[in-house]
Length: 193
Image: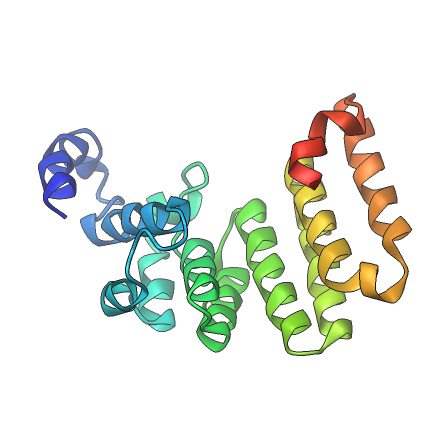
């Protein structure tokens, strides 16, 4: 918080005049990114839960123009991932549903669908999980975010298709996305491992 508070005036001087980049969403984004990028055990889950806004609050933080349209800024997908990492699947799903409903960026919507797919798969609902992963793939493809299409197909494969003996379906999506980028599948071996 201290470092963020030291940084914020410089950022606010650049973008504050636009009136679309409030402090609270960006503070949440930075904290969520730190948590999501930290190694397991580096941060106390109880401390994270103490500052993590509710799903509804995360949805509100995701509404300012700068957050909902600039680059890949977002609060809902990061928040859903944070809740998922903390084992709070209900809150992860609630937050991800808000992201699907209100986000304008297709990659963020795709990421939220991946969270919903994983949550559904863990809950034993393979049909819903498959629908969410297919939606994530479609959103990523429409956005021409082919690497994220590969990630969504990987998640579909891991959480639904492998157990059903249908891994070839995801492999076909992955191969097609690689083809659209003019890349060999081997380029993405570390991502697919």
